[in-house]
Length: 389
Image 1 (cartoon, one colour):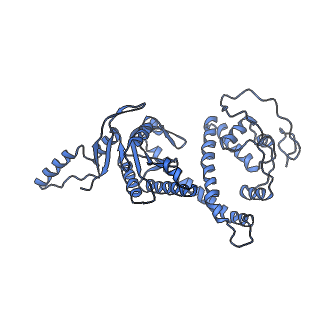
Image 2: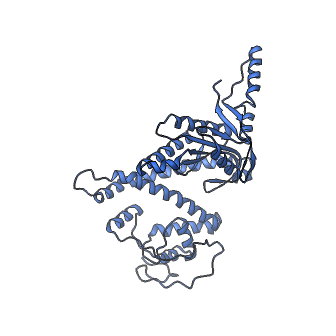
Image 3: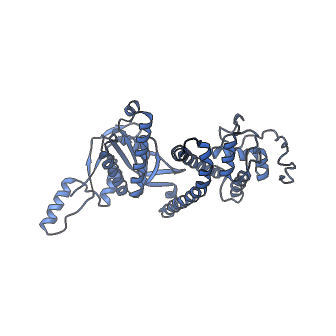
């Protein structure tokens, strides 16, 4: 196959040398100039698996792929790096799919649907997310499944047919989950009160942290430590999702979650404490939550509210949940916690005396000591608990 007339060269021939490097693009990242040392593998099985997964043979050098796609080498390099792909110099390792991906991203920019920086952000967020997913599937999933089922068989003999069977099923499942998540995220955005809230939103943000994790790393074997972390992350992710929150990220011994309202976040936090407390294999847990405006970028959250939640977590006693004043106010405002236990007792006694229904609250709040928090001034944490009456 030949490239278009503008390229003027057969794809199998040596490509013309690129022009001298242009002046740096205003959008170039500090990683733009790199050492062209990475080379694609020439292992026969790896190549066969690559062809199976990608559905195409290696055909283009990066320069040829960029010219065939009709984009500059500079832009193509930034797209590839944003997706997390190693620089391969001018080795012939790219396929028609790589060319099509470049055309699509560049086409979105040319059509005015995305700015160039936004297209690079799309590439980066997609690359980071799928890279982690692929690593997990290989490390924790395929590695176990490809154990030779019979003596004398090699893992090599098992891997190819297994990937061939799993690939279409996993691909369809990935698209299904992505569409579901995209629908949920889009729904949250369009329900925002105004345009500013689409980016800077009011959320309850919480950190859940395993107490004494550093000591555990010195005591447990690596495999035991990995199993503990996986169990913690899995349990946390399931509880956050089940009760209407969103898991933002996991950090080994810590998870970051968010919820649209204080009541949802409070239920998640207490469920996490209760679940971990009843699991003898788990260390103690502590949770800190703050409520306020956050900035969202590439699925992550930033801002003073997030910093405050992190600080509250670091000062929370084990098996407790500390929240900030704004979080406590929102629980009181929505009637999910009393302003004070003394006031709640008086209201209950008065209601009982008058034959009315006694006010019911899901949560209880107790003000804690005021203390200075580095970078945030003096804060007054509140201890959150579940109310049984």
